[in-house]
Image 1 (cartoon, helix red, strand yellow):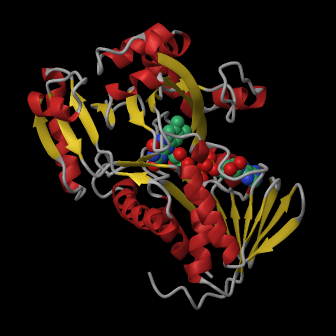
Image 2 (cartoon, protein in one colour):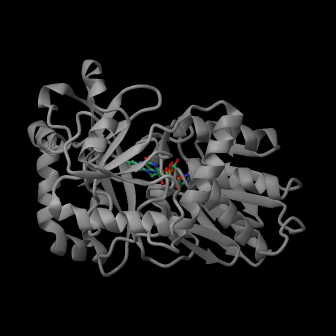
Length: 405
Ligand SMILES: Cc1cc2nc3c(=O)[nH]c(=O)nc-3n(C[C@H](O)[C@H](O)[C@H](O)COP(=O)(O)OP(=O)(O)OC[C@H]3O[C@@H](n4cnc5c(N)ncnc54)[C@H](O)[C@@H]3O)c2cc1C
């Protein structure tokens, strides 16, 4: 990428004050100090959706296909984030993560994970046998594990707030309560109509999370990939049972279902979460089971991608739904990893909703996906590890967006 600091872009717009939009805005102020950077956010506060409702894990980059954007940006983003949190006094605890194989049938996939981690250059990974596994997590089940000592936990709301402070200190502004209604690409940028005002930008970056497909379409982008919302429900261990888990305890992922598999996550501000599961949400921003947005639901059911996904995966969907409706089923899934856990140890915790992009054939878009439409750049898929990777995603996007001006 050439030098972008001599860009003609003076008015830079970003849609979305989640961690990615704020990271992009912050990066823009670094690259083009002479520009005016404006973030447009429909909510009255920062980080109200995925960023403020996730597991808080700083991923090491173990899982991702070597060479993918996720593999590159997660590792680099994690390094940038560690340095940033240290500088800004934001808590980040490298509590470590253990991925456990419950039986022989999972060993081959755990070995494959070890190979991936090595290919991705993730440092410090270690294969551990049963005894050592128990030294790390005395209450865990399993016959072998993969230990990542550098996986950590942080508070992504606090990170997003610090990014916003940086944007404002550099002269940028964050317009809350400004919902983007229309985007008109022009020969020299884009005009953006919001509920409060109309803006003209030389460069526009869309980081709209759960609404990313709709907002990108406003700018003339293609229909697919479409967002299908999956709610992730959590329970929390009662305080007197928190010592059942020391760090982060995960199952071996099933490559067919990247986000499934209940796990144990220590929170940086205290507490241990169990979850999340993945159930179809009937509202993109609906955090309770009873939240239904008819427009969202109809769009999901109409989407070609969702129908194809549902045909292939209804059994898995039914299993997740059972865990959602029954605390006992949820506890049973958790007990496979920590046998001492009972339903009585779990209390409900706030849920999140994942923006999962789906291609027309029903395949889950695995990698980060970014579309460029002249002077408009749209993030079309940024699921986990999007928060970990946010600063690296921002570097990646900002330089490309400015290069076209
Ligand atoms: C349950 C769950 C657990 C996760 N766990 C982890 C984890 O442990 N580690 C990790 O790295 N990642 C994790 N992730 C992923 C991570 O949270 C996301 O990758 C990241 O937050 C995406 O940030 P974002 O800014 O793209 O989206 P968001 O945080 O969703 O922000 C998008 C913003 O755009 C705004 N917006 C939308 N439409 C408009 C409009 N028309 N006008 C103006 N504003 C608009 C929204 O209001 C919102 O504020 C998890 C996600 C979920 C849901």
